Amino acid sequence: MSLSRPAASGRKVIITCAVTGSIHTPTMSPHLPLTPDEIAADAIAAAEAGAAIIHLHARDPKDGRPTPDPDVFMQFLPRIKQATDAVVNITTGGGQGMSVQERLAAPLRAAPEMCSLNMGSMNFGLYPMLARYPAFTHEWERRHLEGSRDFIFRNTFADIEYILRHLGEAHGTRFEFECYDVGHLYNLAHFLDRGLVKPPLFVQTIFGILGGIGADPDNLLHMRRIADKLFGRDYQWSVLAAGRHQMGFVTMAAQLGGHVRVGLEDSLYLGKGELARSNAEQVAKIRRILAELSLDVATAEEARAMLALKGADRVAF
Image 1 (cartoon, rainbow, N blue to C red):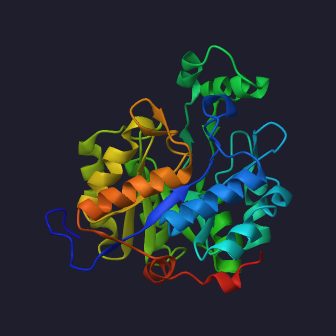
Image 2 (tube, rainbow, N blue to C red):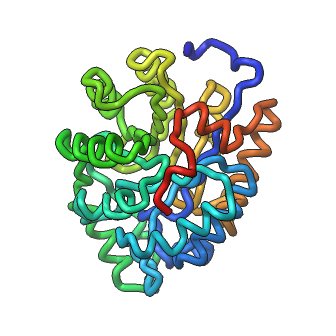
């Protein structure tokens, strides 16, 4: 799709909502969902507000730290499926210090329609956030942020192959390919050329993480151009941006023919200086923006059709 081509009449925009993630910590917002009950309630409300895809991490209910424990995931996954028709998308990125086997434990048990898949290893710096908070509720929060100064998120070519084979081929799960830099697009093209991934690809380009490509509009245009060159019409393009860049970047993406991702994983705020009280608030805001741009929001079933997903009746939760 050319950058200069106007949006096609009737085009539907997929809203993804990333509910909690593994970046932000409990001290940063009282509204960040941490327990299974909170994650389930926030995810259901986000779906009701218009999110077709719900992207999920788990937190230890005792202190809110990220956890890969499948038993924790299973406390909220069935409830979300029963209450909504949203596509459930489980992380394979997990959190700091988790092995690929730990990161895959919940997805392999749940066999979801979709999982995220980071398309390369990278520095992932969260430590600048230390300066914003003089004290933390839990000691692990400070260690978590400081530890990112010397942390490399690992997804080698072997790791990616392992995930594609054991989760993709074995369970029919498709992927939100998370591309934090231009090289990640080329990594994805490599796996496409080898036949280990098949179109339609769901390409999530990510801006503003320290260690990835910066949140500059020129970079958004460049990532779109390269994705067009590599994948032609064989992909669906989505955008997320960290922190204060969130709404501006996803709005720009929608105007350029893309899909959008919001949620408290990516930004804790609704507007300048205003904490979002829920994920649903962010979904409702981007839905209003899309309506002002005369763009229609995709239903969960329309998203399934666009992304060739296997259907909610074929998951294991």
